[in-house]
Length: 95
Image (cartoon, rainbow, N blue to C red; front, side):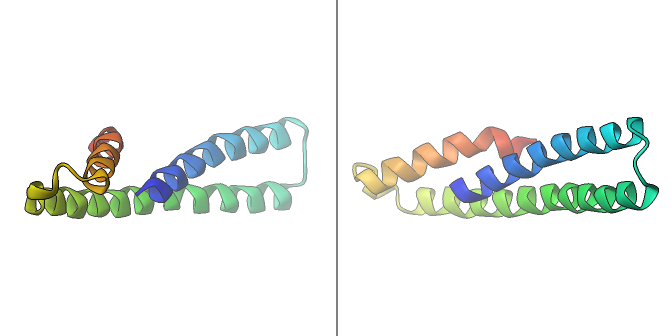
């Protein structure tokens, strides 16, 4: 789940960065072909965000279900770590 959360964040940052790059290219009067190619890169990044969000929600749901099933292990470090991770991702999957 950590990887998925980080991946989603990276794609969101890439969208912002790429949008700024395209706007600068337009302002500088760069070639339309180059702008079009950069726009395609931007669209690919945008398409990855919902995919990451879906995968993250699925992983969170599975982990939450597993935590409920294994509540008797609540004193173990692994259980505590998993519970902390699920709580950390909760705000991301809520969006």
